[in-house]
Structure formats: C-alpha cells, structure tokens
Length: 243
Image 1: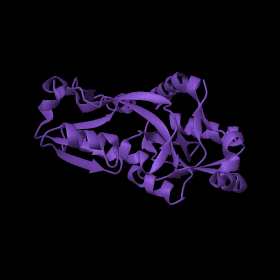
Image 2: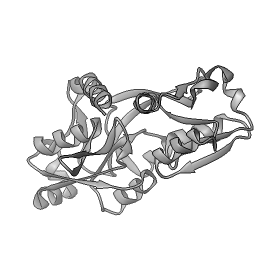
Image 3: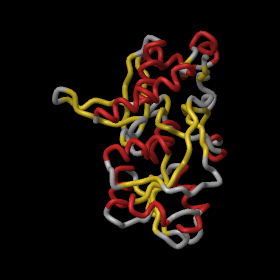
Image 4: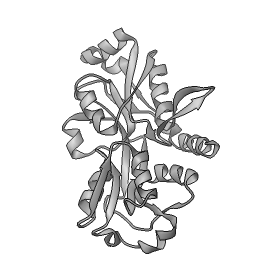
C-alpha cells in the first residue's frame, strides 16, 4: 500500500499544473443545473472505486475511505466552489446512465472521450494522457510480441470501458471476458481464465506493485494513447482547464 500511495503522489504532481474545475461565475446564469447544485450545496461525483491509482477504497483507522488521483481532483473542484463533496460509487458501466438521469452531477473516473459518449454527455479538456497496454502473467511476457499473438485467445477487460472496445475491435476472434469490476478481471488473469487484460498503463503499474507475478507485454494497440476527462450532462456548466 505504501508503494501505491507514493505512486499516486507522483502521478498527482504530473497533473497538478492542469487542475480542472467548474467555473460558476462564467456560466451560472445560463445553466439551471449549476444553480440546483449550488442550492443543494453538494457536488455528487460518480466514479468506480476499483481503479487504483485513479480511485480506490482503503482503510484508515478502521474506517473505509476513498483515495486516488480522481478523488483529489473531486475534492479540489468541490472546495473551489464552496461545495460539500459526495462520492457516489458504482460500477463503471452504470456511470453514464446515472449522469443522464440526474443521479450524479459529474463523472471523474478515468473516463475517455469517445464519439459515442459525446452524443450522450459533454466532456472537459483532458487532464491526463495515458496509454493502453496488455497485462499478462510475468512468465509469459515474451510469448506475446504482437497483438496478433492474442488472436483466438481469451482476453479480459472492464465492462463498459474503452479497453473493452479495444479488445473487441483490435484482436481477431478473441473471446472477451467483460466484468464490472477490474479486480475481478485481474483475478481472472491470475487464475488463468484469460491470457491477458487490456488496461491503462498507470493502473497496470499499480497492480504490478501488488502482484509481482504479472507483467506488461510488448504488444501495441492502434488506439494506444487515450485522454482522461471529466464528464458532465449535456448543456451543463462548462469544465475548463487552468494552467
């Protein structure tokens, strides 16, 4: 856990120069959604707290708390706007639906902007760029040198993510195991139920610190690099980046 916390601190420093926040002064008059948030005095942030180092649960003095880069970002947004922060933890594939139906105000959960998602919600500028990699068992790292080596193999990914889409579209005839929780996908890899897991590199590196028998293969994806953004409802307060 200490290694993971240090990793988070370093990652946090990398994005500290591009902190994201809601700018109420510029957009409050034209956005009733923002007025309702202010009246409530609480910002409801949706996320999937199974995605270290971005967001995860840990125990402090016998109490379960949320931690991670996205948690720090959520705290920053709430503080800058004099709002209380309410973390709404749910499965990743439920987040967009919750945002569209008003159960949460924004999503901060390592999300990527895609054309399909842009039809449903609006996005901030990117606050971090990451790469997608294939996580495998360490003793099989050298067995996979090209994405074609995973053709006709069993591959895992978290349900509803861009990584699931990559596994479905870039690996020929692969049998995709999609699970709601990433820890369950990692467990499937460790138990041999899948040959590899498509995941973001920072997340993979966090798991490697806790699982020395896993490794990162050298395969490359067509959609290797991805942005990380905040999602908000359509036509709601604009989220901007300050340098």
